[in-house]
Length: 439
Image (cartoon, rainbow, N blue to C red; front, side, top):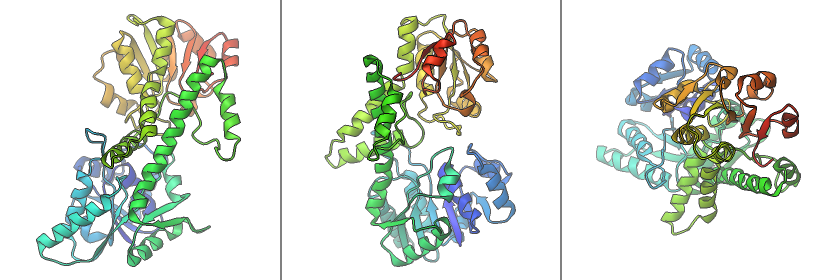
């Protein structure tokens, strides 16, 4: 099949590449000429394990190509995926200007029927707005060309996006047009040969499903963070509590890990957007408001522990920080807890040396104007002369470090672990002042 993907960011590039991997011919459009030039030269603008090799392989095979030419992209694919950004507006609602601009461009250049697929995470009612935009543009042109609008939300985890796309646990299609259903079923047939994973529903339900799923996961994280903070006060161990909770099959173990708060491009934005949607409809989303409030507080939890340990004034103190990305296996710094932690530490007069195996370049782009922040070339270099080590991202390389080297490098053996990577009793046996979350 011939597929166009509008938007060559995280979702668009993964979608287009995985569809090409299955033998389709895919053209990815982006208005950023630098991004397209990078892709055409064999590079990728994001970090995602396995993606660069897959892009090169499919580009070399002639199944995957890139363009900035809107007319070319519209003419290319019978199916047109819209995978552009939907950043939060000032009130927290999703900004749909890029989605609607993509819809207008498709209608402006199309000369034959198209199936337009909303892949971006969009609020309920967006498909109706896309339909209206396309209908109005076609009317302006004085032409009558059939089109369908499908909601097909993505459920990709950064760091595991290829596996999520190639082996999905569900494929949600919000579609009410039989021809569009047939095309989408044919497109996704190679991805669920074991058993049917396609859930066909009305468009508005599909749009809400994406927000509902992310909001539920964010809720579990904030709930566990709140519980972990209480466990500390009560002298309980949240890890033992987690095992006891997760053993209940109605609850399960997924997303029950407390930490330094969630971040990234999805959870913070989607929780805000769902709260905004509720507000527009006159529904106070009380639980999600609390989820967001708890998460913002949790991002400062490690700083609170440092203040309790060293005092309110951190002037003259120097701290090491391991992990900058919002999660491992990505260079994504959006809403990362490290940004809040670094800003608060340096505001209090401290200096910070940070290390991240992948996200350092992106972190320098978004945080490099802070003169009190430096970037270390490796884990141990970050520790030299530091009053304490803060662990913010659970990269695998941090799981079994050389604790003798850590102790030798730090001014004093203090570790504040925002991801509960180590056994507290063992670390204390080694002579560390070790503080985790809820333990």
